[in-house]
Image (cartoon, rainbow, N blue to C red; front, side, top):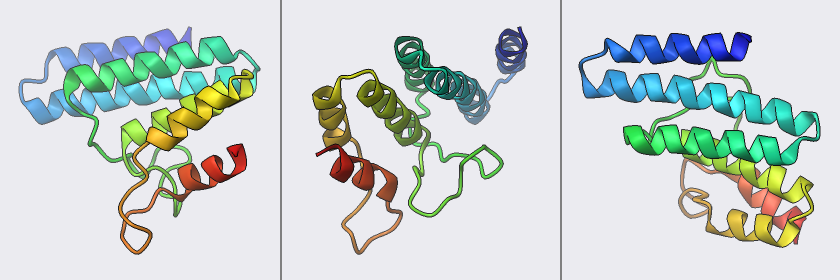
Length: 138
């Protein structure tokens, strides 16, 4: 499939990267591919499959030590004011949405409560999407 080819391309690209930042960037690309697949599965109502994709994405990011990387502006739904600034925040939010949609509302609320939502309300960057989702989930 196209998804498998994209993952293989990122994997092959990452194999030749010698510096740490290059490895982290390759991991970010791979994680965003998994995140995209999870979003698609969520839209199809396949919430367990979606959550598996989000877990894969988080694993890729964790293994590469890339959790602090910001979402590239060219990524779909990125750069929106109040959206997730880092890759971990983005994937965790999408996972919480799938968790909520699967009928596990209380677990989704816990996930949203523990999610990094940025500094105090007067600071920047803010992660208002997570704050709004938590308010709605209550």
